[in-house]
Image (tube, rainbow, N blue to C red; front, side, top):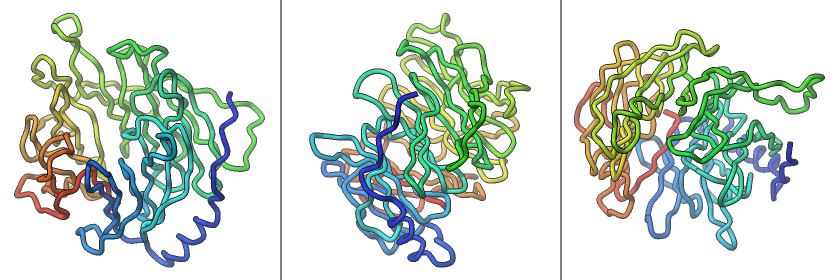
Length: 351
């Protein structure tokens, strides 16, 4: 196992400062990006008020406790850095360099651990979990990844892994215990394989089930298979197909995005060539519908509120070059979008 590089700056001081700034409850925090040609991360209250600049960057992710925002920052010589900043505003501290595929960045539910991919510009990646308090990095697995997600109790992480870059990826879903800082295992833990079909990816761990993608109908479609959502237990048992989606050629289909806290609401994204829009999926029946517009200029979903009643995202499609992008919320049950921030995209919150 390779030895992870040490973080550039000492994290405990940053952690202490953040704790002093959040003496009781961090509250609900919203993060987003403005100005796609000089992308800058901001934090605000969850209604968009009280905005504060964080730093130049992309792909902000708010911690579940609302105290932190992790984001991609481009350092000297185009270095891809994972940074961590307190949600009070101001630039953060470098957690990790050689940060890759920032859209897969994930927080543990207890806000103590971050999972991210590290590696060279080309080639295999390391799936790394980072202890926020100490900055310690632990490599979970090495290869080519397509999604990962923490268990609700933050003790395990599910991930999909392929050994080559072949498309569609010949990947399977595994799980692995999250290392506990200061604890040395007498016997090294082993990954647990949850699928064996080489067609499974994008695991998203919910309160009771893991939802994931299976690639189907590869031989029936001219330009490759389509995505459908499946469910399984955390032990890989009881695999059940959830969705039956009409997917035109050149489009891929559904990718899971977020669960509500009680598992009764599921948000997904329908993706493909020049296309990305949010879809709500009934986790019992598989029934689905777009949140607020489909096609190339649809509403891109990024998060659910914990109660599942609101979808957070941005309008205008996935291409951030348009000035009419707005960070918005839309009722899960359907309704009129509410604008939180104008000329902004890539939102994240802990509401």
